[in-house]
Figure 1 (cartoon, rainbow, N blue to C red):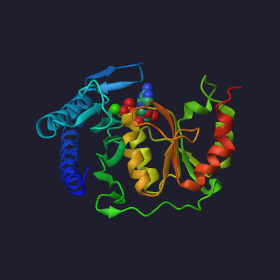
Figure 2: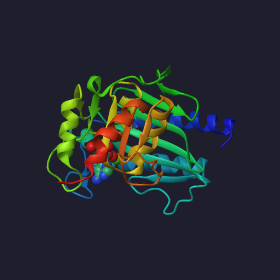
Figure 3: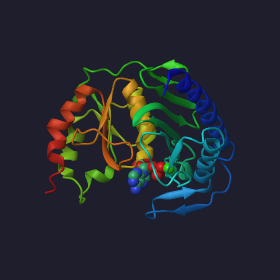
Length: 271
Ligand code: 2AM
Ligand code: CA
């Protein structure tokens, strides 16, 4: 994707992110129709569908050679990684959207020939738009984010992870997770993967770990974190494909080595 095309796309998508956010804010107190998907805690509302339909319509009308991968299924059914793909979560943190009316985001990442080119995470209720273009730095609204502190040690870090991985489970050795919690300054969990990526990018969190995320939870966040000087891999430390369901570790490069070597090498061994 050439620079002019990319900047034009960025500006257009930025305007649509803000428009979609305003749409949600205007309806935030409307009665909700809540359905469940894969399990009783996996929620979806008419608003998730409306926002995804909004972007699907823009793509079809103005960028019909691009592809859409969206959580709610309005996008393409097959994907050619050599094309330009918009990867969208219309509402990331639907449980927060329903219960709290805050702490959710619209997340949109654009990949071209497999490369992350543009990322947006919109914290709708706080009107904070995080964004990045490849090799152009990361921004919160109009302010460029500082590069992550590479010397930050684990004992002075705040780590974000979901509490369920600290309980007995079938995926990981939760005792290693418990040791990690003991060894850090503090832990947080916000319930929106996209916002958790954004908080890593702005240095409010030092690492975000998740055992199972979908492409739309990750697509924008990894671009924004990378542009702030951080790294995103799976918990084995391996690079992640753009269309994969995967575990996630996103943080500054120094912490990344510590977490992989001292914790995650062990964590997969279920006792
Ligand atoms: P969602 O609100 O778009 O579903 C909550 O811990 C975070 O994990 C949210 O970002 C949420 O996104 C995501 N999430 C919820 N259920 C998930 C699932 N079954 N697989 C992967 N991610 C999920
Ligand atoms: Ca969602």
